[in-house]
Length: 311
Image (cartoon, rainbow, N blue to C red; front, side, top):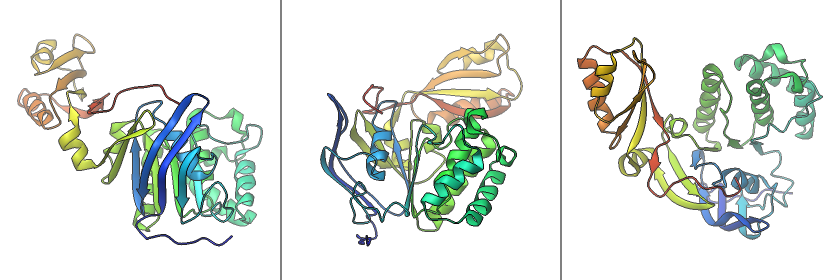
């Protein structure tokens, strides 16, 4: 089936999309367009993020509304299958096949030859430091290694559109960086990447558009700059220290919440907004503290709170 072209700025188009599971509405009348480049969906557990990706990939049929990818309905179009790939939240691998057996199986479905699969598989596995598991059966692997293999599977066919569900889940820092760089390279090549996450720290590693969803509905559609500047309020921050400080100093930090010991190397604080963090860090530096890292903890985003509705 031939793929029709849409406007260049609209690769994926959702129009009044609704998806239900029994009485539960996972996606509620969502209208969005995603263009080439890196697109991010942020939301808590149960927001409907995974369901949204599966509707775009054509695994789920919309109950109401329309999904259009490159001008076609992904639920009906066979032509889209080789141009799009989904990294799902459950690995989508066969436990009793080897790593290379899985990759060959899925690669063949995409029309790849075994030589092509072998070359790409070895390259990706090597980059992710998982080459040593190429002949291992999937059930023998750790969650992190399964995630690495699943990511390899999702990019084997060199897709034009890449859908990623929590792509760095369970990955070590080095492998996470490889995945992020891969996403950025796809963006530079003019491809479309849509990835979902519940972690603000993951989102803020990129500079692009962020769609915030809650309980199946769009709450905000913003840039990273807008996310920082207008949405973050009363942020919990974890400050890791390279060397311990006194508990007295820790308790004197503005917004102090708790410390991890009598001679803390980690301090949790609450600040009014992201701009306040610089003042706290300056205070610590002025008191001879050595800061190793700063991490946001469960930020309170305006209009976004936890809610359990089919993720």
